[in-house]
Image 1 (cartoon, rainbow, N blue to C red):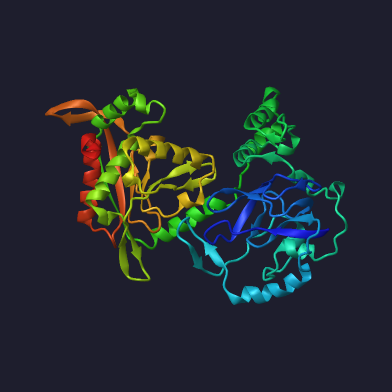
Image 2: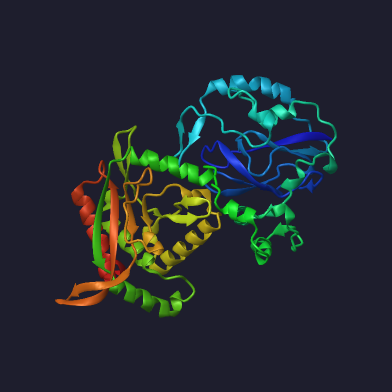
Length: 451
């Protein structure tokens, strides 16, 4: 019997760290190869990690909420007939030399690789001993802790790990945190022990039936701090880099979208579209794709190293989606090849998957142009910031019934405002204006886009 350590892998495109969301196993559990061990959150998505070993869990080295570096051990498994891992002390001695070989990489927004930069390790959450450790110590905390002799582990001998065996999906965990519910106090009804959203909501509502105490009122007035990490941290860094790298220009166009609204209603009545969501965003996406076909230079990126403008061969259409984990921009690959119904299906699947936090990493990279639908929040327009590596982003505002001059008379019409931000290094005022006008014509007369 030998102890094998499972180290946090790089799950895609040079990520350097991840947060442990929750364990699916506990100390003493017998696991099989490819059985799900843990769910982690990277700067891109939530990912479930399967076990590379078959054996018995002997130790969980990190707790939910802790952020660990790629390559750090996160779980130990007793494997029959296997060679033991190298001594932790030997690994620790080799760590400084390995760290000196290359600088640590800093993650940026999805799809844009990593930038070489010196970084400072984030403070850990797993104990005072780590908080007192020198900041220059290159040895990850879990490895240093493992250097001490370890006695045979039994479930009762690890009280600090017991609270980690609470099974719940990431969105349920976030809901519990927002409502102030301790998941450990909930007894799950499901056979697999997974806590559901309904159980969290019931637990939050139970105290509400009684009188409101003074401490509860005081708690409402307290500040709440939210750690900047994961998707939100990566998005913030990328937006700052974009704003100070690409010279932004934003133009606005207010149009009569009445015909688009009429087309949406007609499509909803057709049998072919009854099982898919049809909205003005669908016609906007189609109009943008047709405008790109007419003005392909807008679908480009700036290659600083080669000093070239790269005009993309396909339209990988990004759709900004607000999720509980922050803003993500998954994209539809080769959107120009899709018919209207196919585009509707792709939009529906993309947004649903993003809100569940299950967007594949491949869908979060390689975008060429983006739409952000601020109208869904009742906002008229805005000045969107470019996604790094893209030349343009279109903000689609709310469609409202307003007085409009139509055929020489003032009539109530469905009116909206489009805002196009573009990189002035690649796109001059003429190209940006012509492209925005083409998108607007497609919404004023959808037959232009459909044909």
